[in-house]
Every structure is written in C-alpha cells, then in structure tokens.
Image: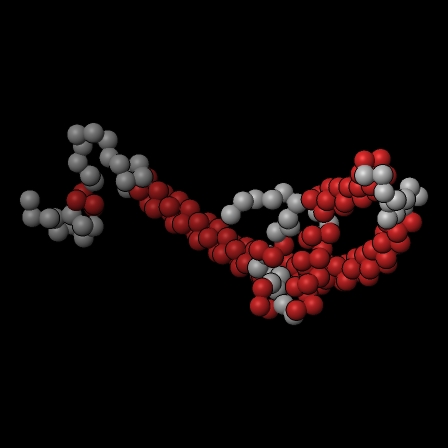
Length: 180
C-alpha cells in the first residue's frame, strides 16, 4: 500500500472508532474531509476552472468560431462556484463536527492512560521505597557481621594468608574442636 502524505492516520489510533464502528454519516464525513481537504482536490479544482476557461474562450470562440456556452465573465461558472461554496460550508461543518468527535475520543483515551500511568508510578514508588528499606537493612546486617568478624580477628570474612582461623571459628565456637 502506497503512502500518501495528505492522508491522515487518526484511524490507526487505538481509541478512535473506525470502520464498521462508524455510522454511514460519519464515514461519509471522513471521506469528504479527506478528499476536500487534500492537495489533489485543490489542484483538480484549479484544473477544472482552467479547463472551463480554455474550452469557453480558446476552443469555442477562437478555434471553432462558435458562441461559447459561458462567455468571458463566466457567469455560469460563477453560479456553480457559488453553489459549491454553499454546499462546501455545510460539508466543512460536518467535517469539523467529526473532527471534534475524534478529538474527544483521543482525549478520553489519553485521560484514561494518564490515570493508569499515575497508578503505575505510585506502585513503582512504593516498590522502590521497599527496596531501599531492604537495602538499608542489608547494609546494617553487613555492618554487624563485619564488626563481629573484626572482634574475632577476621577482616570481613577474609583471614590473612597462611594463617588458620581463630580457635573459636575452627572449633565451631564451643571449644570441642573439629576432630582434625
């Protein structure tokens, strides 16, 4: 599928209804907005007006020497443009109403996601506080074990090279020995 830069991609948003979820009028408003609000429509519109002028002025009057069906001030063209402007005003209102509905759906989705994210952040903060508390408790336990080791001559569980541990540790602390 080719990508057209003038097309909008709001219908891919998870919160916006699209396809069969829309009424026939909403689908028509979306199509009308996408067509009338695009560069191809603008260039096509200018092309039709230029073709109208060329056909009436150059082809009929100068080449075929017939009377043009809409001579130079192009009154018939002005009538059609006036009718188009009246219809287009209503079309723009319908498209704007549909755009407001899309914006509302996106805003509700965003609000719901914001609430969910706030809840997750609160849970994360509580878990972080628990981890900090556990880490502080572990640091305190480590400090007590290190102090006990210093009291019995060990430096945090490591004894100097080629030395045997003190008798209390070697004997299991009760003075009976290990039987070696």
